[in-house]
Image (cartoon, rainbow, N blue to C red; front, side, top):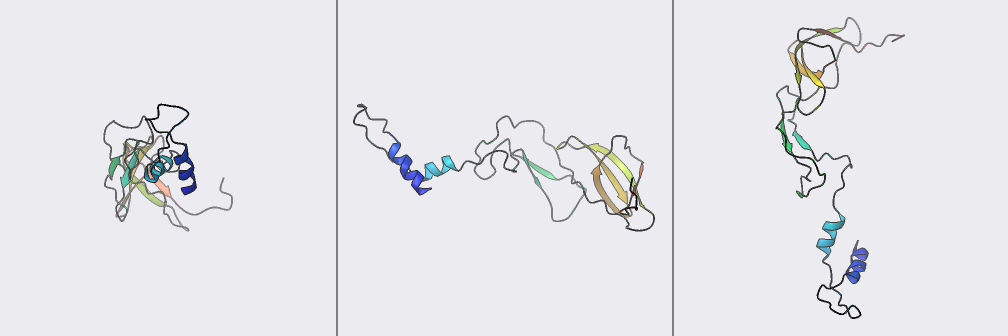
Length: 159
């Protein structure tokens, strides 16, 4: 990095130079060069659209969301253009692991409600079993009052 800074500092020209043959060399500060070269790139696995604030343990309460408008959360610099504006949304935390019994009859869960989540294109279903409630991704024809069977048992011939 330092070698690159020294090389570029030799190449920079002074804006006050009037004669092209006798140009003065103006040094570039390492801080400004480092900011220019270390700009974060979009597509590096980091979302510049929103930050979801997750609590310590799973909850069915809607989660708070900070919209970033395409800006880096640390520096505030614009990274992804065309993102911003729109209405504020709450994020619903999906429980991706469908726990069910390994042996015996399947666990029966009841669909309480099917809602639109503002932060995703799929619909989300609020499901209850026993004294636990959780959000899962809803299927196409799922509606409130449906019963879902959940099991972790894999038969010898699953298809």
